Figure 1 (cartoon, rainbow, N blue to C red):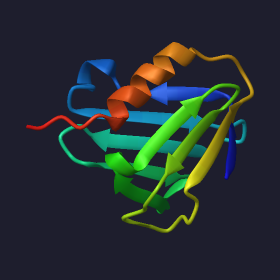
Figure 2 (cartoon, helix red, strand yellow):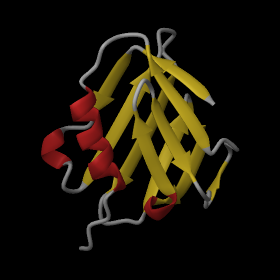
Figure 3 (cartoon, helix red, strand yellow):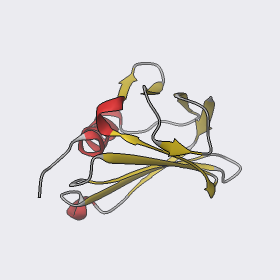
Figure 4 (cartoon, rainbow, N blue to C red):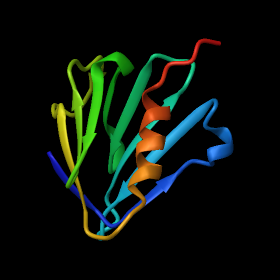
Length: 112
């Protein structure tokens, strides 16, 4: 699936030790949102509304960022979306270093 965005919003970095959310928003206000509670083993993806979602283990998630961001999911736990590869392209400039930091926090598992 290809998703083009013009804005990224993040949950408050002061809360990243417990919860993180990264949301990509398109020109027409559609969104792709990734979220995780750090002491849980799962990541959630929501696409445009709560009925379109994926849930998977952090160990089944990888990402790469070069010209565009590639999200890969090896195995889905549950959800209504069948895609396991997301190509996320920007229509504007964004802070790639900050996004990589946020993705690192999102994919980390921290025991309670």
